[in-house]
Each structure stands twice: as C-alpha cells, then as structure tokens.
Image (cartoon, rainbow, N blue to C red):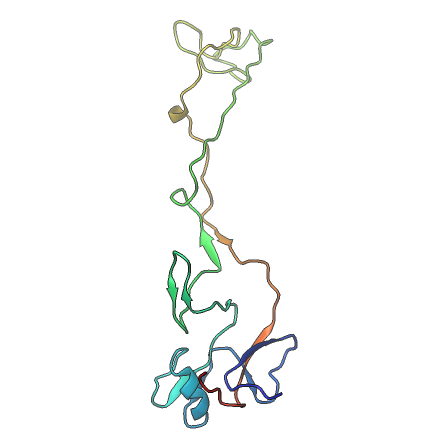
Length: 178
C-alpha cells in the first residue's frame, strides 16, 4: 500500500524512513517539493515564493482543526498552549488557612522577661505573656498573616506522554479531493 503525499505518522524508531522527513519545522525549497507545497502552502512557515515549512511536532500535541464546543476556533498551522505556568494568588482558587493556637495551661510562671511557651495578652486586664487563663476570644483572620504564598516557580502542566517521532511523507500518491 502506498502512502498519500503529506501523510503524518508516528514512528517508534529513531530515524525517518526513506521518503519521509521528521516533522521538525524545517524550511524547504518549493522548487524541490512543489507537490507537497501545493498541499501544505505556508501553513507551517516559509515565504510562499521560494520556501515553505513542514509542521513542527517537537514537544507539541496535534489537535484537529475546527471549533471546540463552546470554545476557540483552531486553524491548520496554528500553535498554542504552554508546557508550564506560574501560579500566583490571582489564579489560585479562594481558600482559607486555619491557624490554631494552643496554650500551655500548666505554665503559670511566665513573665515578660521569659515569654517562651506563653502567648501575648492585653495590658491591664491580663498581664502580657501570662498563660494562667483560658482565652475566650478568637483572633480575627485579617490580623493573621501566614508566610509566603509561593516561590513563583513554574509548574509543569504536561500530560503524561510517550515519546514518538512524527514524520511526514515527502513522496507518495497525490490526494484528490473527494
């Protein structure tokens, strides 16, 4: 069975078979590949007068042309997407961090000169750093700041994958429109 000119296939070996080329975005002369140029045009690059490009499927996923249901419209040769994103507070979902404070009820000898293991209190009603009572007030969340919200490092969003070599048929039967 002979292949149609311009057919793209995935191969599980590390070379392009005879009559095929890797889909790596190469720019080719129209004069040598006029029939393939008539099928691809400049969808994948080139100037259209002396050169044209092959598709580049290196680290890319092929998708079908057309419109997604309720989504974007994709044209042949269009690229998009990203292999990683940087998450920050503007693109994280709203959430709350709960902070729990525990008192050491057995410790009644703390003072301002030795506050370790105690908690701050109000001057006058309760001596500062006095752990001899049970608190009856919950601290308001806006008064609490919890550390850093991230390091700004990119996060990989690449789906699990299997590496294959995509090749395009450089010779074969010229496809006719049906």
